[in-house]
Every structure is written in structure tokens, then in C-alpha cells.
Length: 198
Image 1 (cartoon, helix red, strand yellow):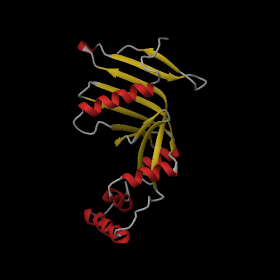
Image 2 (cartoon, helix red, strand yellow):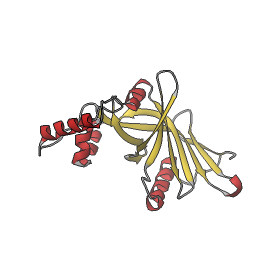
Image 3 (spheres, one colour):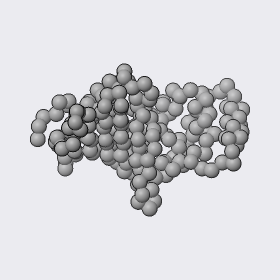
Image 4 (tube, one colour):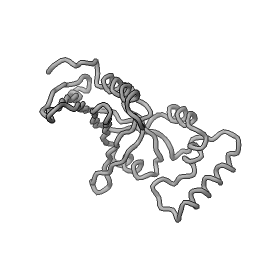
């Protein structure tokens, strides 16, 4: 095994995210989130990263949404960042856990007021008769909260993916790409680092 160029895969991820923030035109924190459905089939969608540190990668959702229910039933998931401007990607796999109420409350309070209203109004992933039904719910909660505080709904919070595997991919000419993996060791205390064939 060779020495890591960064102290942890988290610091390398943060470095690449910072570079993407300067070069990627739209949503440099967008990531594909893969979950597992009740029949064992994969399910995939784009979400936005809202926190990244040595504890893991955080995103927020409605617990009653399709992804929320899948993550509750099977707390294993995968993430993929892909940045065309950098010609790089990061694959991340691991288990998920719910963030603390304090963390979720702090992030919810930082959102625009209309986004907080939307969290209450949207019955995420469930069928609606038409857009008018959603607009009526928005109007209902706008009236309900008026100009007062908007608390975080009990059904809305965050998940943190706690990684046990990373793969960093960089484009190279003639498809001779660079791929480097970080796998958590059996004791869960360090990272095994390997370069793999493209």
C-alpha cells in the first residue's frame, strides 16, 4: 500500500469540492444518490450536498419521500460526484444515519422562507391531482405561519452517509484514466489505499 497524498479521503474530497466550486457552472455540490428499494432494486436520483467533514456527507429530505423510506428500511447507500469542468468524479459507499435534531434545525433555519414553506407543503414522492393542489398547500402554510417563525417539520431532516469506501477518478488521454481507492480497514480505524486499473 502506498501513502495517501492527503491525510484522509475526506480532505481529498473537500479539496476537489473546493475546486469544483470555482469551475463548475451549475450545482458543484450536486451528487447522485443510490438507494435500495424493497425488492432489492437500485434507485437513483440527484441531491445536493449540504455538509462534508470527517463524519461523512450530509443531505436533507422528507422522511416520507421514496428515498427517505428506502434509507430508513435499508441504511446503505452510494454517492457519486461528477464534474465535467474538472473531468473528475468521486464514488462513495457506506451506511447512513440520521443527523441530530440540532443539526437539522440549524440547517432548516438557514433555508429561504419559501423553501421552509415548501418543506411543509410538499407531500414528497406522492401523487397529486395537479399543480393547483401543491399551490393550495403552499398557500395554506403561508397563511398558517404568516410572518412568524417556521419550525422544522418532524418528517423533514437530514441523512449522513458515513463512508467505508471511496474511489477517486481522473480523466487521462487515451482512456488511460487514474483510479485510486480508499477502503476502511477491518478495525474501522484507517484506510487501505490502492491504485486500480482504469
